[in-house]
Length: 306
Image (cartoon, rainbow, N blue to C red):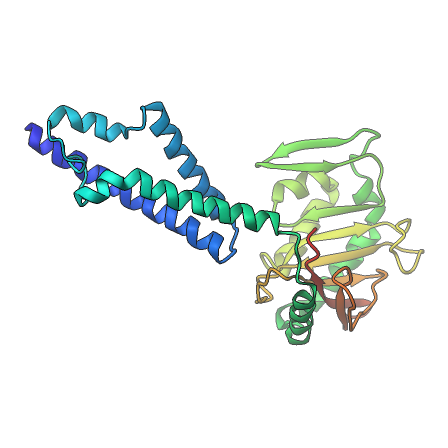
């Protein structure tokens, strides 16, 4: 391969890298301008910082430029990239300015994170509460919810106290820490992790729990809180209580940063319907009879900056 061919390949590679970083930089700028501070903003910022560190390590030169210099003695700024000469010449100054503007906007957004528009938050929360409906899918599984509840409540002490000692027991499983601290009256089970059920439910109950989770359908119930009768939130102190959290995405929720949405089914829990709020520290809730003593609730929690 001739030196000219090698230079062409390096120019193509350098141009491709330039295009990729344009996407990264302009997404970062766009996101902070519209105040969409999501994980991609931090990924983009990390890539930008990485590029900066590479340039610092190579004395403000791109490593591709250093390699390309071996195959060209041109004094033009764009000898190693398919860009207009003026853009190649002022490329670092232009994009450093753009990044600095983006970072300043990001800092402004973060410092104003707690400056909440309470009226808008409550307005959006009330609107969502009026719009949100009880979904059909859970009602098609009422029999399994009722049977599962009877099984769990009938074995609440056995399930909650299983493998609990006086010391905390935490361990890493499939990238997720799982466990509990000392003796408790409630325990939250994550339903989408078979390893979790296997580790923290008595062996005699694992098959039955997995059976009902399978009957309820994958993902409908994301987790459930099981409590003994000793828990202060049990309505009837002669028996335990349970709360099933339903997958919000399955509920086709309107995603809005001004409130959190919860759909859940509960048994023997102290829960109070709330039709109106006067501050963002309160919540809205509506209930309906599900089956037997089970109720289905929708809760809208205004975002309070916490």
